[in-house]
Image (cartoon, rainbow, N blue to C red; front, side):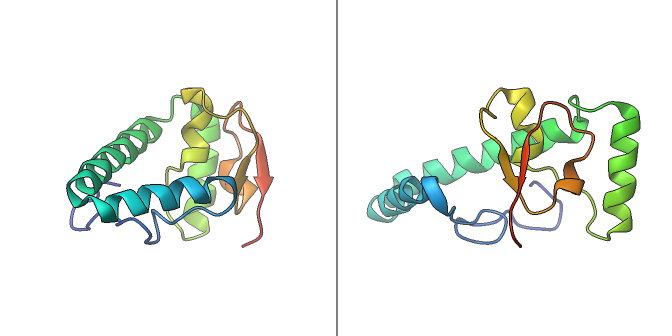
Length: 123
């Protein structure tokens, strides 16, 4: 998230997209509130951005993976040319917020992560 030389994503952009499915109504309510009360919207945006940044930093330390699994995963991500990205799906189990399978676009991107049940989603 906090990458030098790049701005953080704004709500609705790639990197912070509107969710589809069961959380779409909550997202829309939040966006409606942010539009109706711009000061409140700025507070919400700062809080969410700070939370995403904290998750990124936490995930970067990868306490949820063995060293060997991490090395293998990083090598795979590097070979695929997409670099390394920390996702909520990756850190959710260690935060205790993954009661259900996590939908992801490619399960191989998460191989070696403990306590994570994945569901492949179409790209």
